Amino acid sequence: MTTLKHERLIVAGKDITDAGTRWLEERIVKAIQERGVAIIGLSGGSTPGPIYEKLGQSNAIDFTKCYAFMVDERHIAEDHKDSNTLLLRNTLLKGGKFLEENLVRPNTSLPIDQTIRDYDTKMRELFKKGNPDIVCLGLGPDGHLASIFPPANIDAANREDAYVLHTTTEKFAVFDRITVNFIVIRKGREQVFFMKGADKVKVWDEMIGQPNHHERWPAQKVIEDGHTTLIASTD
Ligand SMILES: O=C1O[C@H](COP(=O)(O)O)[C@@H](O)[C@H](O)[C@H]1O
Image 1 (cartoon, helix red, strand yellow):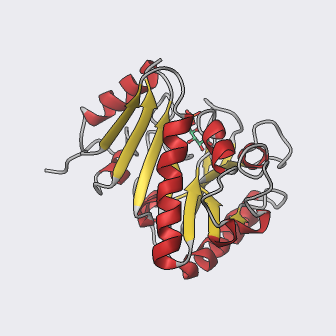
Image 2 (cartoon, protein in one colour):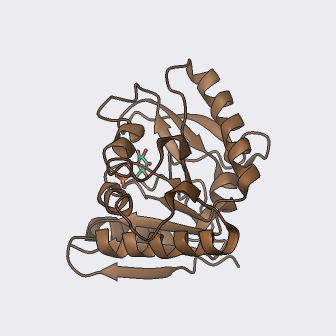
């Protein structure tokens, strides 16, 4: 019987910024100390921005040894309001400490099929430095993970020869999406989900209460590995 055991760090009040930043910073510093490099996957959306902004101001991290990749992106210009790259530019990269050349991201100026192939190549090149230490994730209100939307095609998102997928959504911002697959997300030594508000925690708990429903709850494919932490506020 697969289990969905995970660490829960529920923050009283509205703000998970301090808890989330501290959680990431500790692990990034440790990875650099132990392996000489830290690699983190970064999701976008409405939740993680303040955490990324505070992390980008860290005085504890040697950012010359810290690399990041984007877990997913919308296929739009990088200066569009719904771009996850713009989110990172306005948060993690804002302080000037995180090096833009250390951020591996999709080239959304290409036609989407080329964007997918190009990003797949970039991901494989990055992982020559080692597997990700941390993958930061969110859970959409419908249960989507990265840009893998329910009902998820689990086999298509679980192929060793296709780390990056083109998905689409009519429910959320920007129809055409680029997303890494389960294999990339599960390469992470740890996964952390950032969530804000009691409504989101209810979605999470509904998912946890329905194990083995991967098409409906794609995040279960990640949580089943047993190294997931949930950091959430309840206000
Ligand atoms: O569209 C997306 O949604 C998910 C969840 O975002 P949130 O705003 O509900 O936290 C996000 O993880 C993903 O990166 C984003 O592209």
